[in-house]
Amino acid sequence: MTDAALTPTDRARRWWARSALCCAAAVVVVPILAAGFLGAVALLIVGTGGLVVTVAALYAVLTRTGLLRWLALGMALLVPVLVAVWFIRAHLLWVVLVSCALALAAIGLGRTALRHSGAETAMPEFPAPPPQHPFLIMNPRSGGGKVWKYDLVRKAEELGARVALLEGPDTIDVTALAERAVGEGADLLGVAGGDGTQALVAAVAAEHHLPFLVISAGTRNHFAMDLGLDRGDPVRSLDALRDGVELRVDLGTVNGRTFVNNVSFGVYAEIVRSPEYRDDKTATVLALLPDLLAGHRGPTLVARIGDTVVRGPQAVLVSNNAYDSSDLAGLSRRARLDRGVLGAVTLSVASAREAVGLLRRTRLRGLSQEMPVEVVVDADTDEIPAGVDGESVLLRTPVRCAIRPGVLRARVPRNRPGVRPAAVAVDWARLWQSAWRG
Image (cartoon, rainbow, N blue to C red; front, side):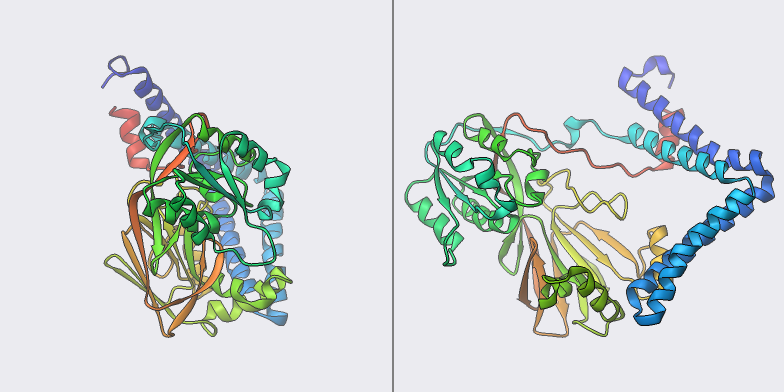
């Protein structure tokens, strides 16, 4: 197809794709022109070898103790320096830097060429009249005191909301508080607090088919972020009381308990459960990781993810819809919360070789990522620790995680920052087709 026959958007994507392929080709050509074929091969061997040794040394830092840990740390710091010195002495450092820049440009241009439009990825909105009797639960301690810092109580009451504060020496049953508000005629429930509190009240709202308002007054506000809310200014969340729309989003359940973000099993759950974790996080992590990763401490897990069975993973993360996972560090955002599936990630790393294998994103005995509707986590014990929306709990095995599609009527402001589109994985075959075949 000629460029003239394409729409302006498709024509732009074609040229983004061509630019990406040109940058990718230059990553190969530049080292050969600068250092010759054998020099380029030597550069690749030294660079790749240094990366592999560094990753293996870092794995040893996590899994060894005493002198071996210090030796591994020294190697992890020394090897990159030695590789850089070799590049400099061989007058190839500039080649490495240029090649890295070209590789980053190729990935960025490729993602731009393959990225879908915002209209294709955004959750659909539904019209919503202003509530007449909104009821909001606020935790003054959450987020370092954001409720008082942003004067949320007064501003909510000015908009007609009734506010209940979670304060005082006694433990307050949040679920009972929300249920009582529903019995008294509340037509909207909302929370200014952490994601654990959000989940408790969201379950009540879903049960009674009431709209639910998230006020971004927690510490990390992951659920608010994935709803497209302003995490920096919780006052803007209150705009939904006068000019809001609804999103029909999913909720996850773990042994019948609702969660809005995720449930973690394995290494992280064991570490957070430790009494020493609150006093010294770093020391506790370093002390517990060797035994946990080696399987000498904690239960042995078996995760059944749809038709897939993963035996002995060190970590399992089950989320309400899948996280953006185009890279290993991408478990932070969910582009949509209405796909009707769980996200399931398992990590199985029992040796330095398997740790290096993660660089290639290998699935066998490495990293697995699925989008099932149910996950069952079993173990060789009656109970296992888990982190449910960041809260450490003990759950009876087998633990069943499920998804409840579209049960929550999330009320959000009409005007809000929105959800950042998920990063697109670069598919070179699709890029080639987009660049030359239209």
